[in-house]
Image (cartoon, rainbow, N blue to C red):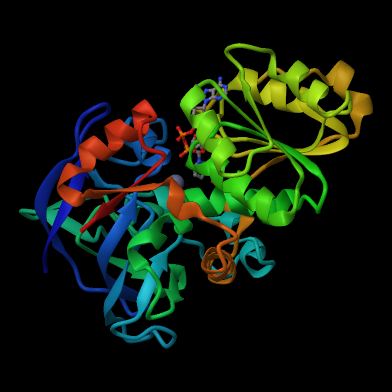
Length: 366
Ligand code: NAD
Ligand code: ZN
């Protein structure tokens, strides 16, 4: 079938919308007509080859759409179902069966390999293969094939155009808080970075009943917005030392929980030093392979803190995404406030506005 897709051709270069050929779905796949796709910071860093997905490639990994065809072995989805797409996982390794598919032993080849596991690419242009299956979906396309396993069915009246980012950025921030840190009512948390991931984490902390919610960033307008959405304190780390500021806000104790969404080594170090005794910090911000961060093992040895590296909020998408939708319906998780819509044709403007910080979560509408 002929489809339209945005093709990444080289680092730091605009994506090109081209007509490609999409192959038939395999027996375990469904064909999905995309309604919308979020743009995540990870799309930009893969275009720029921080992670070596072979180019040319169709990126995009926050898709939502409607099932248009189902493979012969698919029993749990039907034509016409509305779905949100999530990262791929094998479903049979020890981590998948233990309920942690984001640590699937094959996560990297399944999501970053540029093809199906057997090497077959879904997209081609005049017979030349184009990398596909990015995060198990390659959602910067009008139509794509995904394994049924990584499609999450949602209600027929769900606001599909809004829901794509639940498959990555929003799931990552909120899952890190709700599944990993688990702050309780009345507890404290600091979030470094007020992009889509950090703000989703913040909204989850608000929903959890945390009562000291400190947002740290270097962009004053983002901090103002965080306050509007429920931050109790904001810290501009260009103006003040965030470790001192967090200690002051918490009466010298430090925060019980923290989330670093920046991937900046100095910020990671700040996070470790902001934690209270036996506090728990999570890193989700991406850095280039080989990036090292300072960690004061002398001082921190006696702190009893835990640090976790977390992928995609350690979520089971078919369990977690419906929870986020339910919270959103009740007005307890207003992630729609982070979203700005763009026509698909303006994908490069969406990337630029995300990069400049003007838009928190761009969503392309097909
Ligand atoms: P974003 O660029 O919108 O947000 C990052 C924020 O960090 C910005 O507001 C920026 O101003 C702030 N920041 C940058 N340097 C800072 C500093 N020195 N001190 C304080 N704040 C600083 O990005 P996003 O979409 O929110 O994504 C955040 C990160 O999470 C990215 O690195 C992305 O690749 C990564 N990510 C990871 C996963 C995962 O599974 N671990 C999933 C999705 C995204
Ligand atoms: Zn992402």
